[in-house]
Length: 164
Image 1: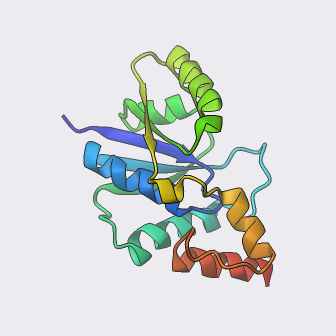
Image 2 (image 1 turned 60 degrees about the horizontal axis):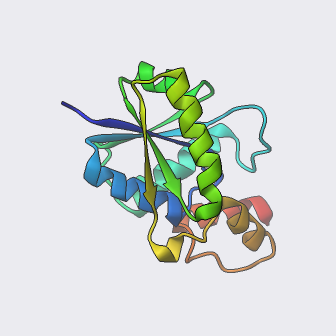
Image 3 (image 1 turned 90 degrees about the vertical axis):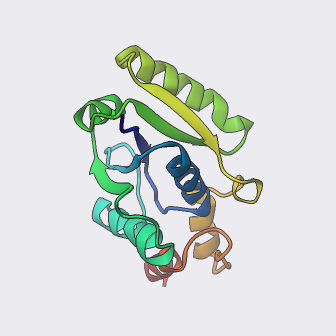
């Protein structure tokens, strides 16, 4: 049986924390669909097409991860509907710190109520990546700080183009 996991997020931009979760997920699942959210209630730095391109460059160009095991798509539906459409019964979520847990716990519960055949699996990124957030990465680069410890080379270039 093929185990497909959906890893939803805004990825605005993708960080080494996200990438850690993807790499760990690849050890557990046959395929991971990195689902880049495009809901209207967020103020994104990058539009959906830019975020898709940034994620693909980070994963496939910078890190040379297996394109056969990872698919990057956009979505603007319920994650549970996306799971059903892609025949996935696992939602993959990353946890950085205890502060993430309450929100993620509630989200997993709501998803379970929406579709009780879908399980949420939480993975933690490595300790050195747990402090990284897309928000902080954007703030650091905006203030001309060095973010090479937080994300890939192509993502850094995309961020620098936005802020230069």
